[in-house]
Image (cartoon, rainbow, N blue to C red; front, side, top):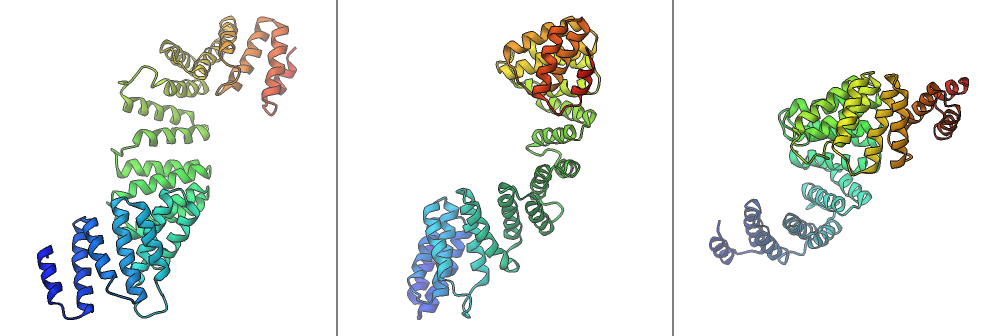
Length: 372
């Protein structure tokens, strides 16, 4: 019905109950059309017609949800919290579905404003009435609880709620890829890297054109690295390189070439690793740590190729940029070994001592101690 028809019916209504019902119906139609401000006004009119707590709670909840959808968080919070306080679950007029739905929106508001514990509490209330909620609300509730627990580092709980959300959705629902990504991230948090890889792969299987597929590949590569599967890590970095298409600024891919250089080095592909390191330096990264790490791979690879003089020359240049940088354990031990090969006992002793100080638990220390 339109506004004119609504006004006409309201004038003809013979009871307060009829006017409340008409208002609820018309406001609901406005809500479905996403006319939230107008819907809130009509719901407000109905609110004034009743004194029954559960009915008042219902209309306050509807008004709060209108404000929520309009982005008026302050008003939404005010009405939603008052709605929850007014509901009387032990009375016949109690509406389980609305009580749960109001709690659902409160949980979302709390999450948006960084109040994780309060968000969980509100969502847990909604979960008690989950059977009364629409499927979309059910899976979004579970997904929200998963995010809550992930932010608290409670990855097991986060995974459990993602699984619940997946059970609600159909096989072709677009929300599935998001949920599998969430599960994979939580498996990473638990250091269960094989499970993480499996679930990241599921994301790409469901949606090959997933909007964050470059991030998915990057996280998969990181999982492979942590499992010391440098071959698969390198292949995954290669996929990322293809996705990037090398169309951005010249420094944008430095981090990627660094990852590839490390993988190639650990795989024993020293010439390829060396070429990647040289490519990074050709791009002249502004970040000193990136530049230092790139130069360190020159030292690492020159040593493995038997080019000890070049290894120490590049190493000394590296240390002018930074003393600590990623994967510097590879660098310092090869500086010591290169000087040993060159017969420079003083420099060897210096780097052997430094390596032991920086990496006391490394097995290389036992080998270095045997060298004179």
